[in-house]
Image (cartoon, rainbow over all chains, first blue to last red; front, top):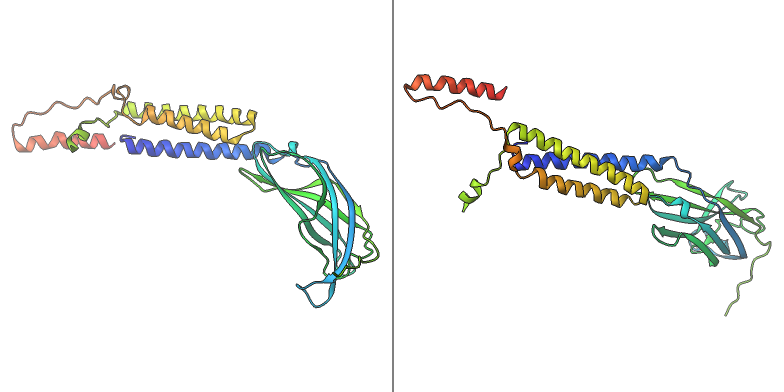
Length: 180
Length: 102
């Protein structure tokens, strides 16, 4: 403390310690918050095809196309320890070979300060809804649900499932591909 | 050129050092409390950081330069012993050094 540099050193170290304590306080104030909000998912169109899956063995696999509406108000999720939300829509279903299949169909990043009221109509899925076989055809219970990762300033990275999901039956027959 | 820099006083006395430490700790803790409450109210952690950085800047200005208020209690040194013989001058200086390191 007798020279300028030693004072600068202790001042800087003390400020950093205080900042770390504040960051921890920021985490503690939001650690036990319930970040679930109701989500309304509606499926407007379902289509099923049987196409070549070039990534797997030489078989034709089921490929589903889902068009959905999504509305949710994410405002309660945001607070001072949230930088962004990573939303993703996943489909869960059981097949004969696997009791649980999960496929991510669509995702979206919502930064803080952006519009938190989601009201999406006739969204097409971003990613292919490929089954690893023929488990989609006539599958009567395919559940779509929206979940999100909360990206915080400090602390844990919670994975939250939105309350509200929709179960839909898939058609019994494949859409015949038109050849041009 | 260097002689000009050497004339700038950088020294604080002991009470001044203690005062400086108390001042910057107080300023940073107060700004931390204000920043935390304000950030919680406006739900922006960035404001908390900015307010603490502001407290840091204020305490830098207040405590880094050796302002006159930190030099109000200079140490009272022993008066210079008049040089009579070579041996007798050494002893009081050594005992004084030991006291200082205590």
